[in-house]
Length: 99
Image (cartoon, rainbow, N blue to C red; front, top):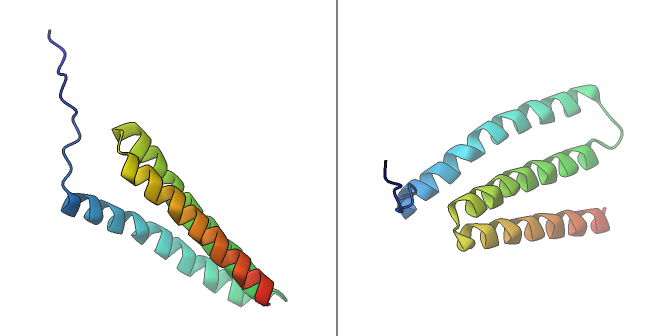
């Protein structure tokens, strides 16, 4: 048997965007349940729980894309994932500094 030297990843940019978009849907559904739970529990600092939950969800999603970029050897995906994490943590820091 011969080894195929061609990479199995031939994902076009439209497929890449579609894959990214559909990876957000499960996180959005889980986050909606999370928000309902936090608001129903009537916690004193519910806004902090929601902010940290949103940041954790985004960092988790970006980490998934970093791993996917490392596996497919696409440096742009890794850079965008790292940039997304930095932006998410920056927004969280700004939010925490203003409350």
